[in-house]
Image 1 (cartoon, rainbow, N blue to C red):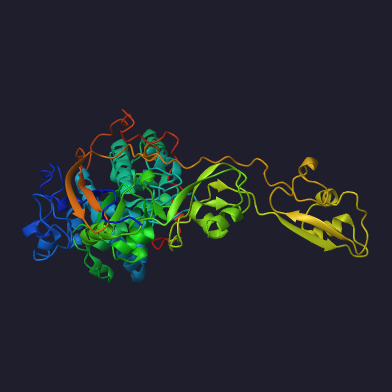
Image 2 (image 1 turned 135 degrees about the horizontal axis):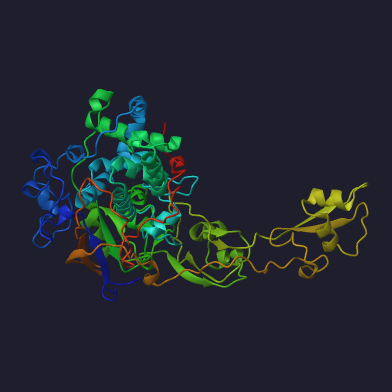
Length: 572
């Protein structure tokens, strides 16, 4: 336990949405205009209650007395800029959604945490705000959605496309599920494929089917002298219905009453801020210090695979904006360690049962915390998380990432008594092993009724190497296995090279346990892009590692299959 006198300085980096710090940057040119009724920023009302007090800005506590925020739906409607798609599929999907008001309500409720940020990012880029509804089609705004094609997150990136757009996928986390990172990547991807085709409907079709597949369909029609708009192209049924779903949702948002629906207002104000710590912290403790339900914290931080948010992952913690000051104060005054986990360098051949006993935990907890396949001996040297004290727990609702650390299955000795009429084959079948293995493990013994014979389950017991097992002795479980990449503790291994420049302000909190040094950060505006283009420009080249890469030429089926996302409520 650290006392207030000896506690080290705890540094934080906070990333706030633009309207938390109006003094940090001038308004961006080229941004979509809003009607006066939807303007955000009257009388200091841009900050959510409890926002950090910024030099030259307005504190959240002052904002409590300011004019309430407007309705985000009004702001979104003002930014709708895509041409309307008219087709029988649109009418069909609009009727389908209208007949399922509970599903619309579920998606709207999920979207509350994320929609302001998405609309803000679309406006920064000068992109149509109806694109903020795309996660309803992709994932029903479920950040944990995972498809049969291994697409993940709100925007349903498959692994290869995620890597192309600098979304880290490692042991600690998967940025395809990160709200901020995946939104930035999805919008850059959409803008890139819009630049490629010069048409938003074709860009959306590309997002689902693959930009090169759409380009081939366009070229096919062009050669035949046919129109090249979305409705005129030949495409898979999934894509044929994909874009109409977004248009149907847009129609409902524009006029919910016509569909017999009522949309609850969403405040046109920042929902969350991001906090960058230089100390590891448990997700469960972070929820406790923010005084919020753990499920709500995980919904804002769905990218994490482990129970601890590590500095090595170089990923900020997302906290509700209204909880920001409270969280900082509680961190500064919390006198116990911020994590109940510690890193341990395990050696190949160590048994999980021995590690569980050593660190006063269970094999199942070790497997869940580290993503371990198997329950016997480790097959490679790995760095893993083990409990540092009795408070170490796996947060309920944490994403169950695929196992990446390999261990032998636990080796278990079994036996059976031979019955009259038994053969080696029938006895082996009763024991669940191969006849050849059973003979080897009981070498030198004749098969006689009433005699006990042994066998081994798990590990490498089914291998036929006769040198691996002594007669009637246990098999060695130390055979070479799949070598897995060990954990990297260096932040450079997880650096997000595609992040935009930032503008910052420094703040500080001093409590009984530690001093919290914080940097309030907002992204610098990207170069504005026009909402529509008449010509089809060539694909941008990747100038450097930090530039957003062009999609791979082998992405004709990039999005195919991602409409099977788990937990989806938007399909029909």
